[in-house]
Every structure is written in structure tokens, then in C-alpha cells.
Image (tube, rainbow, N blue to C red; front, side, top):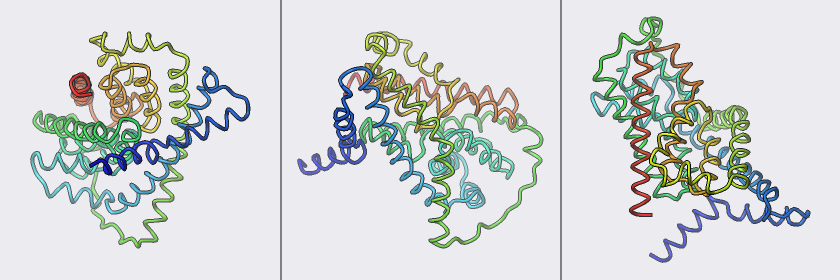
Length: 337
């Protein structure tokens, strides 16, 4: 057991967390005369370390997940989901969401395609909720900061929110709240071409380049905000607003996250800095879920496909689910961490 614990700590700290990289950057900054114990030097170290670490993980994860995703083109995904019914269909829809694009805006075109193809509305919403919230990339990135236990629980709870949210929408029978052009769209049922290993590798490489170009600016912004929080904002302020003394911290974090737009890669450094400053775990995770799932740009895009009543229902279900998850994690942190 001791050996497994040592191996686990090594993977957590040196492989995923890349603590060696933080030390290397710190030594390099010290060698050029920058004091990393000061605010400015600490901010520069935090910024460089997180940008490099997240970029390395980003490229590796996108490559791996895109290779897996090449086995699940929209036509095949539609057929897989079409074989299941009831709660199992929602579970499959949520699980397929874990191997799709990393942000909510990228997931909406697939959601529209699935809905146009005639898949049950609740199933497509389970997919839409899980896709940005609990993709495989988020699991690894969360492990790099919070450890594998919290990361796994986060993914399981996120899938639960997606399944329950989609099931509720299915029970409400809101098919008439989908815009007419979506419901009447003709579905072309094409078989995906059989790809060779080389084709899949090329596809994965292209996805890395394409996604990196779209995501990297948000990484820079997210890490920049994280560096400011980590080194310039007093810890007492964060504890007062998002700590255990504020019973409304989860609600406030969720509300603050909705107007923002970022994917999991841009949100992680902000969450890391907030947690280091004394914010509660559940409050930080609620903020992350709100940013990735309910960002304002994605809601504007979704409004083009669904009517206000269905959009409002989607927002309400996700918001309530995120708040419940946040308070649940805070209780978990209080009792077990």
C-alpha cells in the first residue's frame, strides 16, 4: 500500500501537477534577479508555470480525446443513442458528451444536429449539459490540482446532473419549444467513412491545432486572472466572499460564472488561485460548472435553436443542479477533508 501511495503522489505532483516545472521556472526567474517570493515575481512564476503546464496537458488531452472521438462521428453517435430508451438513453447521451468538444459553444451545433435527427429532446440535453461540464480533459486537469478523488467525484456528479436534467426536460414534453427550422430539418443518415489509423492520427493532430488556436487566448486570460488573485488579492477578501463564513458563496459563485465565457482549460487556473486563497471547494467547483455550462455566449447560441420557455427551463435546471453540487461538495470538504 505504501508503494501505491508513493506512486500515486508522484503521478499527482510530478506528472499531472508538474511541480518540477514550477521549481524549474522559479530557479530560472531567481537566476535573472526576480524575487519569486514577492508579488510581482510570484505572479510571473504562477503565470509561466500554469500557461506551460496547461498547454502541455491541453495538447496531449486534445490529441488523445480527438483520436477517441474519431470513432464517434455524429452519425454513429446518433445511432448509438437511438438504440437506448428511458433513463439509459440519457446516460448514453451524457457519456457521449465526455468525448466531444471542450466548450459549450462547440457542443451546440452537435446538439442541434442530434435534435434535427429526431433523437429525444431529453437525451440531447443530457449530451448538451455533460459535453462542456465533464469531458475527459476536465478529469485529468482536475486531478492535476484537486487529486483523483475529487476529480472522479466531480465527473460522476456532473454526469448525474446531466442525466437528471435531461430526464426532467424529457418528462416536461417540451418538443414544441424547439424552433421550427430545427424540428423540420431533414436528417441525412450517412455512414461514416472507415478511417485508417493514419487518418485518425491526422484528424487528432488537426484537432489539436484547431482547438489550441481557439482556446489559448482564454488560457492566457484565465491564468492572468489567476495570477492576480493568487498574488495580489488579500486572502481575507476571498474567504469573506467565497469562504465558509458566507452561506451564499455557492450562489454568488454560480451567478458570477454565468456571464463569463471560458472552457475548462481557462477556468482551472482561476479555480486554483481561488482555492489557494481560502475559497471553499464546492464554491470553486460551482463557479467552474457555471462558466463552462451556462456561459452567456452559449446561451445566446442556444436561443437560436430553442424557444425562451425551454431555454429558461434549461438554465433553471442547470443552475439548481450546480448550486446543489456546490453545497454538497462544501459539506463533503467539511466532513472528510
